[in-house]
Length: 250
Ligand code: PGA
Image (tube, rainbow, N blue to C red; front, side):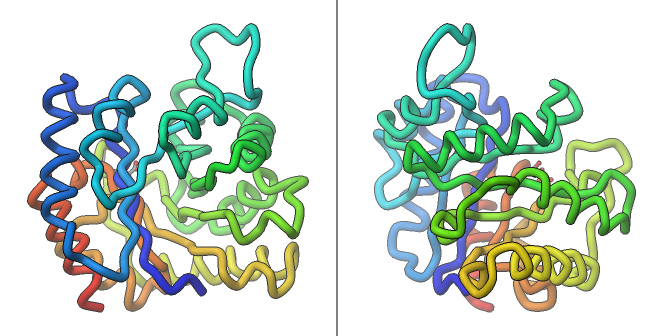
């Protein structure tokens, strides 16, 4: 199991300006500067990667998506090797908003995952069911997205269990219980062990979906996760710093 906790901030298409992105990154870097035992990753929109990189201090940089190719005639796309060159270490892949709003398929996600690994990025693969409790679907998504991943690459993967119904921006979102998170994580661990053997033990599994400074400890303690993917709560600097500090108290 990963020794360090991993907290990934998914800013989505926020904030509105470069100045705001810069000051949010500065606030988080300053607030978590002295904190040990946790890796904090900021994933701003592509357009703010440069300014966030300048302000990030000890934090890591990540993107929210990447292309499945390293270069070429792919209008509007950004390649994993370009992201690596801009200072990214991580890339979020397979977020449900991309699947639902843009029609991204599990096959495309699998190809992006391979390309990200090839470029030396750590993929943060999101899986999660639409309908509460459909754990089989969570395992199916992970199985398909990890298709073709070599055992030698397993130590460079991160998985996120992010049930769609728990994402804060969704209408009628409800918070997952640490117990149901634990069950989904157990099912994912089983898949990983079957697929990759003991190599898979070190893969961090995170929780995503309305995580904040008040509920983070429950997910870490009873949900058996090694960190979180944080949306809305990562856009408020003080709240996000509190979340990181509370996570370390577990
Ligand atoms: P949320 O978003 O923390 O606002 O629920 C998480 C995500 O969609 O990654």
